[in-house]
Length: 452
Image 1 (cartoon, rainbow, N blue to C red):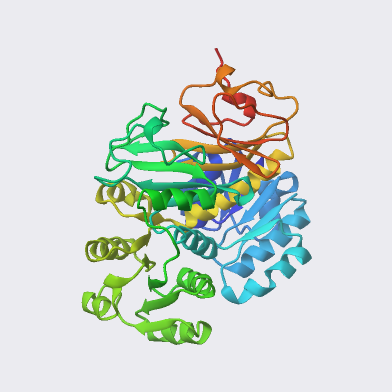
Image 2: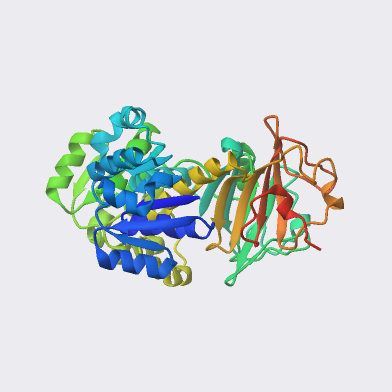
């Protein structure tokens, strides 16, 4: 697909990075020459210097025959106008980044009036992801397949725990309702078979229905349930959106924010939250407010370094679920060494959401991928395919199929029923099939077959 991205800031860069690995034709546009050069050189894409909201610039970028124009500039109004001009050029689909909470209530009207394909709010999507993480306080990551019917959940194995030292085939708690699909250990990632022995320190991903996952976690003594006492460190947009969701679920929310004017704004918008004006890095303040007794803490300040440091401190004094916002990808190697619980990057999440939308577009144009998640620092992909009637895999037991190495069929959804398949199960036409694999670039269900 031909995709034009207007805006080469952090969001535009994250979107371009997410899409370029899927072999799209990408054009990036920005009024800042250095930003265009940096992004076009690093990703080897075509870069155009100019105002992407102007008709002539969009024409030069090829908007007249573009499948999609994504407006990711700094200002919401510019992004909406860019989409309007892109439509005037003849672009088939448009996506606008819109961040201002005041526009949230009218966006569905704007979407219809302007013919937007979708809008993306990085802070709101990050808040959604964080709230999902708080569904299972023991989870490190949660993704969903089959329209939310099944979850892919990552958690850590602790020494002496119920799974420590056990071969997967010997874990009684699985019983056909939970499937272990990946294991991360010492910088490596494995797609394990039944003989694989789980060890303390492993980060294990399972696939299961939500209710089955809850029962499984309770049996192995991993914390489940929604946090009731939540601290949000920093009063930015993510904290606002997240507090709204948490308050609706009945949680007690405290927000600590340094800026007194922002505290007043939050107090006016979030009547049921406790707003505290102070320094989030002040350990005495945190203790006086009882952070060591919290169920969950989200470090959402402006500076990555502060979020990382305060998360490390709170991890030493509390059993809370800790979520750390980090925007700079250069910290990834450090984070993996210091063992933070859960790290989120709002720009990366926005890129993933847009990539999912594009995959849905492609599905109507020939691609067979309905959902895709990149796991374990992009070393593993979990893909959801729709089984077409022409597929070569149909009605053959999985044990009889010659599947690629480093690949596992982990879930089949059929008529509202979830099947965690064994070797005797078969794939039928119109099934939704989820696989995990180390192979990249699979675009059709038949691609899971060995090429030998």
